[in-house]
Image (cartoon, rainbow, N blue to C red; front, side, top):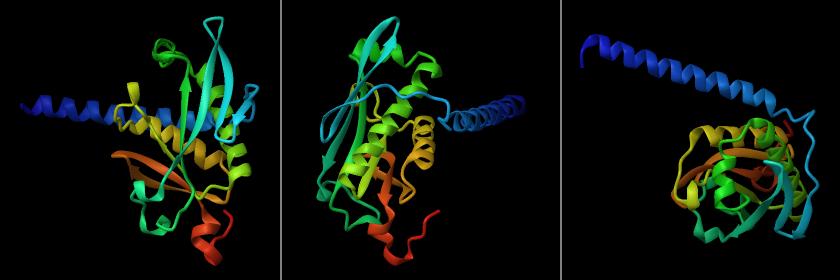
Amino acid sequence: MKLMEILKEMENKRLRVWYSDHLYKRLDEAFDFKNIDIRPITKINNKVYHFDIIFDDDPVDVYVDFIQIKPEDVKLIPLLESAQTIYNVAYAIGDEAISTQFKKSSLKIFIPILKTIVECINDFIDDNDPDILMFFAAGKYNKELNDLQKMNVYRSIADKHLPTNYAITNQTFWNKDGFAAYNRPKFEGKNWKRK
C-alpha cells in the first residue's frame, strides 16, 4: 500500500471508532428508559412472556423466552462454576419476514421493545431468583454471530436496569461471545456490597 492509502485507511478506522463510540454514548443516554412506556405483557408460563407491538399498522408478536441451560453444558468462568440455575434470555419478533424488516426500523420502535423485555427479565428474576442469565446476539436463523455493537447495547441496558444484586461479566458459551448477569450474593458471599 502507498503511504496515502494507509493514512486514508487509518483515518477511516478512526472515524468508524469515533462514530461507534459516539453512537454508543447517545444510545446509552436513550436507554435511561424514564419516559418510555412498556407494552402490556402476558405471562404465558414461568419461562415465556408475550407482548405485541404495532409495526406498519399491524400487531406483531414478541416472545421472550428463558431457556434453561444445564451447568455441565457451558464452561463458566471460575467465579461462576458453582451455578445451578442458568438461563439464556432470548426474544423473537414476529416471523422471519417481519423480523428481517423490523431490523431496518427505527429506534422509536425498538426502545419500547427493549424496555418491555427488561420488565419481563425483572419479573422472571423476582419469581425464579436465577444464578445466571446469559445474553448473546443471535444472527439470522440463529446462526453464530458475534455482534459487538448489539452486545454493547444489551450490556448497557442490563447494567442499568437489572436488579443491583446482579453483576455483569463477559462470558463465552455455545461458541458465541456474550455476557452473563450473575446473582452477586450467591457467588461473592460476604464480600458482596451493593453498588
